[in-house]
Length: 155
Image (cartoon, rainbow, N blue to C red):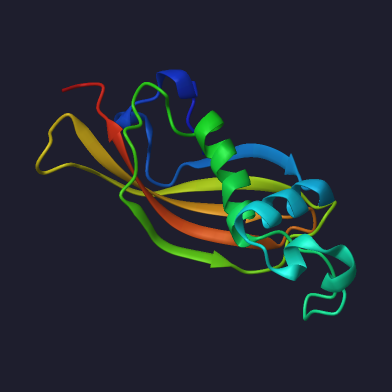
């Protein structure tokens, strides 16, 4: 079950508990892993393919933050409405479950866990979502429990 309302028109009332959203796929390249690693997470297994072979990963892997950023791009483009999303107070949990490697193809699946109207601001609601990033093998490589503040259509 997914939402039939286009993302550009989506408001709090359109995020239905139990609905599942498939947000598409992103390809992971060695160049992007190294660039992100050098800039934001300069550990050898993110920045040097040769030295990475000597680590516990046995090769180059994406930073978990890079994986989260790739998922965030799809969340912004295909899940969070530009007309109603007003930010996030944070995550309840974030897990990096398996390494992401060059050549991986990642898909993002979001399940709405719960929704509730704000007690203090009646023009908005809170949407709690399970975000799963899945590789081409069907393995969940990242999982997070996120919270978003979404404006209501009917105030």
